[in-house]
Each structure stands twice: as C-alpha cells, then as structure tokens.
Image 1 (tube, rainbow, N blue to C red):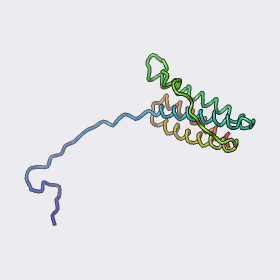
Image 2 (image 1 turned 60 degrees about the horizontal axis):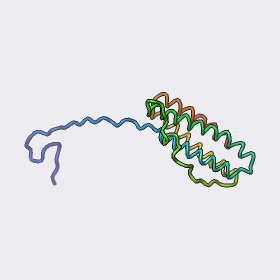
Image 3 (image 1 turned 90 degrees about the vertical axis):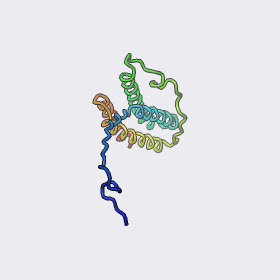
Image 4 (image 1 turned 120 degrees about the vertical axis):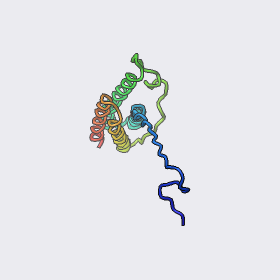
Length: 158
C-alpha cells in the first residue's frame, strides 16, 4: 500500500501553492426574461379573451388584468431602454414591434382559461419576486410592484 501525505511522492522540493484570484461575473439582470414572460402572459390573456368571448363574466374578470399586464410590459420596456440606450430611444426588438404575437390556444371553458391565467400569474409572481434580489434598487422597486400586482391577480382569479 502506498499513501501520500501532503508532500511530493519523491521527497524532493518544497510544495508550491498557487493562488488564483478571479472576479465573480456580475449578476445577470433578469429584465429580459421578465419582459419575455410578460409578453407571453399578455398573449395568453389575449388568447383566453378570444376563447371565452361569449362568457361576459370571464371577459370582465380578465380585461383589467390584461390592462395591468400591458402597463407592466410598458414599464419594463421603458426601464430596459433607460439603462440600455443612453439617448432613451426604444429599439424595435425591445418594444416588441418586430415580432408578431405567438399562436396560443386556450380552453373555451371560462373556468379552465381563467385557471390557466392564474397559474401564469403565480409563475410570473415568483419570477418577479426572485428578480428583486438580483437587480439594482430602482428596478427592484419596479419588480416588487409588479409582483404585488400579480399577487392581487391571483386573488381575483380564484
């Protein structure tokens, strides 16, 4: 049996220690993902509204939620443009103008469609809450505000 105990196997020379210092990469700002999540959520709400158009109560429940999510998207895109483009302009890719809406199918049953939108709100709320810790104070406030709004959506959609 052969064992080594912290030294050169041949007993020659002194052990050398090499210290490598490497900076951690900067934290990733989650705003791009949150914008994509919000766009998807809006597309799903639009699909749900189209699928349950005959259900006045369901449409009445989802319409103000859609308005909130559209306002969230506008605030997120504006914030991204504020820090990405020093002149304050919004590029076509940031505004979403270049891409068409995705094709999404939602259940025609209002209860099922509303339940799906509630799950979207739950998932988005978790993403925005997680984003609070991963970004600067100003963006954290925006993310926390949107997260709180999503919590109210979850309550409304029960």
